[in-house]
Image 1 (cartoon, rainbow, N blue to C red):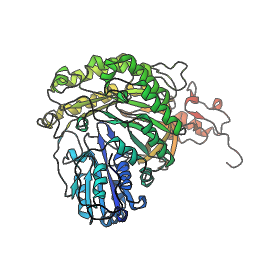
Image 2 (cartoon, rainbow, N blue to C red):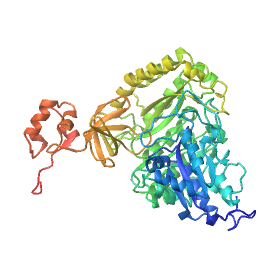
Image 3 (cartoon, rainbow, N blue to C red):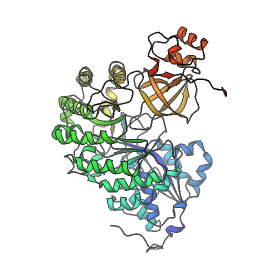
Length: 583
């Protein structure tokens, strides 16, 4: 264990207690780690804890997101005046984001130019940057004009740099003994996040590294799996809950089923201690979700996996998603890229999660797949597909579509289908091939992706969210085309549109009425028929413009039985609030 520093660095230099430090969060998206708002990753949290552990007073650590700096240019003065400016960020998988926009390389460089003090850059940015944060991209490692770049862990670099009096550090990885210390001192920094407390979800780390070596993935660069204890994670949740956080995702791991085991086989007892412990210290939590479940674990250890999935589903909140890294259903691509499961094996893993986790709150029997109900299923699989891998050919697209059709035709559910093009990083087997295949196949990729959205995604959404399904605590984020768009907090949250322009930042329950390809339309639940707008009424299935007009003309109503809607089941969407004297 690294010892805490003395009050004055042994080699001279700046006293940690005298330092003003700014941590800038440019956001992260990795195969097993996410930190784009409303998520906050472990990187800025552990870095803040490491700074305090090294002797910097908490009140002298300032945290800003890159979006804060874009919106409030006056906060760049904090960057300029800091004795130490630490940038954390980096994208090793591409994505589309609503809650925040990851920092582009030019912005990261501008931070270094602005800072008058010492600068340190770290996080997955160490693996490389491209011209833009998108798929079909080659990357290369760059220092972006920073004084120091952490080739190991940025939180370890921050600790060692401050302990040395800002004179330097040796690149290294931190251990879980250090994480235990730093997580004990970092909760204060989440209170500085612009989304705190209501619309913030903390990414929780249970392990790093991976036992497998898929050709494109950066997670193996963290080494073989190394696990925290359930009690360590629970203590961290406890402290974050004390700081006002109500939403958590157990997402920082390659495979949740392997937690607490040997890196491959499930350990249901460890998962029970983890989930029960979290529920005990945060009884009023709003979200408890996960990310990343390796289908090969289910294939190799079906009964232990089934038990572990049941434990998760008993303790999580509805709408949870276990992302499966199928990556490709093409056996040629699987062979050339060290992929772990065949299409048939992945289909069996989809069955297991549907059966053990695909039930809904209120079901009499906790077995799935449950295709009826007014809430989301507890836990469903998601499927990740990556294009541009070695061996990809025209038949690859047909293999992938056939697999997804097989899932749908069997009556199973998928919570999400993620289709992306590869980003190639130095140190992976894809480095030599780069993004050449992805670029060559881009014209085929676009119509293929559109076909899946139209033929699979939309009908799958209808299966997962039958009309009248209620999504609780939808947070409104932006207006567009006369509608208000928002999401729940959680893993791969659905984008929800409601008619009209409602106050941004408002949180309401929403009943689903219609479906897009990766989004849904809803109305506030329960919709008051005595005050609902024409657009809201028209959006209810079975109610057209004429009927909506009749409803408005006939107001007020004393009960839904008085509303002239024929056979429409209004109770699934609406109610009647009887006007009182104040109305």
